[in-house]
Amino acid sequence: MTCDEAEVMLHALLDDELDAGHAREVEAHAAQCARCAAQLVAYRDLRQALRGGNLRYTAPASLRRSIDRVVPSPTATTRRALLQGFGLGGLVSAAAAASLTFVIVREDRDQRILGEAISAHLRSLQADHLTDVLSTDQHMVKPWFNGRIDLAPPVIDLTAQGFTLVGGRLDFIDGKPAAVIVYRRRVHVINLFVAQGLSSALPAPRLETVQGFNIRRWTDQGLSLLAVSDLNRDELEEFGAKFEQTARAARTS
Amino acid sequence: MAYEGGGDRGKAERFRTAALPYLDDVYTLARYLLRNPTDAEDAAQECYLRAFRHYETFRGGPIKPWLLAILRNVCRAEYARRGALAGLLSNNLEEAEQAADGLWSEAQHSPETETLHRLDGETMQRLITQLPDAFREALVLREINDLSYREIADITGVPVGTVMSRLARGRAQLRSAWLAEERR
Image: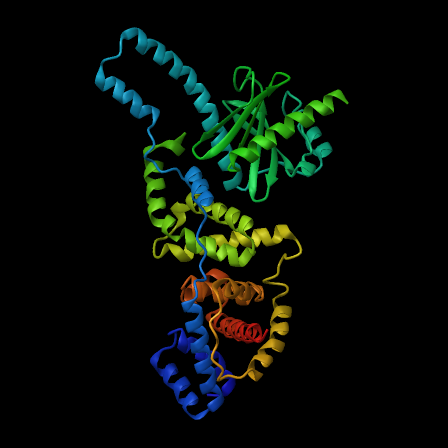
């Protein structure tokens, strides 16, 4: 074994990655080569110094919280479990039960739309079908929707505000076509769905967390807008507020 | 909305039990690869999101190397986003390895019998962070994430022999930097 070979192999020896035969060869070489023997000692020393130091980092609490949002611990109470409780208890009056049903039916459409928006969001990331028109230019993205959908979605460049326009896509929510405008902040994708009648007119924007995703909904000029992302609540709120603000400014100018 | 179905709730629980114990490992590698806490936190979060989404494709065996491989992909995407660092591991590797050759020979002139003085954790972390990408990655995966050569080779997509030589060079550079730090 040459010194050049031994110099590299001695690392494998220290890492306990050599079979017995090769280990003997390296040791035999080191036994008669002072320089390689010294290297073996030096790297064993480096290794011990590294092992002695605490070189690991601890994941911050905020990271654990974001992962809890993305992969929720399934111990949270579901609506289904609540209903089962009512059914078994049998203590609810008929009238109360009826009004409960009414609320739940209405909520069900609401929940279905949120669920479909999340599924569409996940699909867009998974199937690598994020955009049909890929452009950071709002004047390319907006006309693309002409003739493809019977509404003119507001396409706004928010690059200056820290949200990069990635492109647009056609999707379906609640059985109806929706225009999707795609933005990105750092590694987080924001899918902004624009459609008609996704919810009754909302007096104020609504921010909610469903299945670990944050969703911001608002209405504007008779259109329903729904932004889905794994971005944290504060930044998604910032996105929605900036979007509304810029849209208003564009109308008045 | 199958996402909320019973099977998926079971999936979430299984995933959490298997993957969450390695969050510190994932975050640590992200810190060394990306060199700043905010990007590392984003990358680790993205890693767990992707891992959960593709958990069906996980073929069993130790989950740590699988998670670290996903994290590495996320970090490479981040390198690409940063632009200046794009393709560092592939295109500029030769350059990095040539630059390393200089230090490699310097390392041989450093007194081999000298015992390293203990440095504080922060200084050691800084010295590791300053290593060229390919060497830093191999060194962290081996010394801190405690992976085998085979696992490192699979994650970084290079032969085991390359892992060995990157480790040798990474350690040589780290040792010279360490001795230089002591003399300051």
